[in-house]
Picture 1 (cartoon, rainbow, N blue to C red):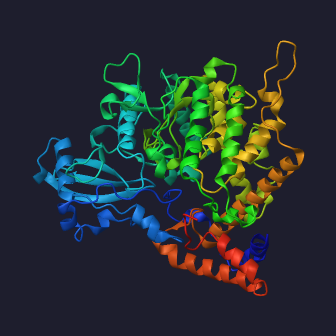
Picture 2: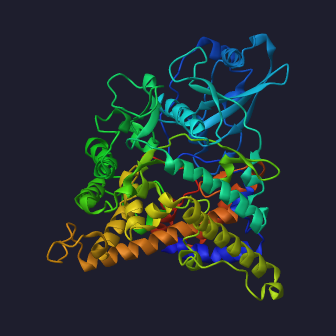
Length: 583
């Protein structure tokens, strides 16, 4: 662990130099896990003619990347026909195109570019264009449109869609035109709120989620208008509606990434919870058998944990097959636990809009939303959970330390932040128990649900050279087999269909610890450089971040000047400079 050990020494140096800069001082935009397919609408004469005049509209300009920046920018480069976008925006507002005053870019997220078209009378409309990296093509936009319409019909405050296009068109890009929801992002004030103010926000979030859990949906999958699905694509209509809304194939990107989009596989919908559990793993098994080849983990900080060796996809296939053998034992006995349920994917303060009085005006960005069995989709949104804290795991009522006033400035800030995180975690769960009993029961009603959810997510994850996490989850099931196995008539416990020898159990435990060191390495490095963990950074911080990265890397290599083999391994493991993402 030479790299991690060297970093610990450098950490002390950078702390003394005052480099310990919180990563969130950078801009908060989300990047993709790795490169995705390029631009779908490749040729359009009007686009080429307008490119020079509208370059900023077509390029990603909201930040920089520490590594592989050219790839990240190419994924987000998308020329389109500006004149045609103005025309369809004006039409959606029942105005002539001559009334368009301005078109400007206002935001760039992980998967979409947001533009605002303003009219002479002050009316405006938002145009959201998915990047070339965004998959599935056509279905992602179609599903979000249908999802938003269903949510509005159920009293949930989301933007109204005024027009959309999922095919080739005069704009030369897929698009969704929406009303502009009033309000500011919750993220602009979230860390500064009082206890009562946080409670007010959490109450509104949980109330919204109670409406989600109360919706009657017939199957797992994603929501569409039937008209937007290819004729032969399976669908199950939502009862009680006459507008063609249905459950179709999963719209999450893990089903469509890279060669997966061309696989002949079952993508849903599913009305059997075992089929849901199986399908995500079957998808990845099909890809491995057709396209898998040895590679390093895409998270380069893990390479050291794997002995600096490329990982064999067949090893991951073996884990997936073990997971499939466990599936019959993973479904809870309570049938209400697998009621098909829609959740907001990745709910964060960034995609909640509020007034100055802390009234939620909109929950935005429902792209890639899925309907899943309740116990699989249950849980605290990652932005609000605090499972790493023992007090939060034990559901202790949060309180500030009695000696808070006597603490120095650093210790006091740390204690207040710990309290804030505990407060959010505790009251999200307390309100869920009070206002959303279905969610509470799905989340807390089965001892093995937490392990099952993790394992389900790992089984469906895009394989990019990491064989460890699913192996570790399988070990957890084997060690806690009595939790999952139902007793037979004579009271005996059936034999676990997955056998892991104790020596292998220990290897996986050691690997888990090593991976945590890799996670800590990347987190610490990101904070030292003042960037987000994925390597993204604001324009104003980019130069300083690059200088710090270079100085830290050279410091590590200097310590290893007498060990060229280890120095070579450090460069292979280093996640903050350009590397081949296909290896």
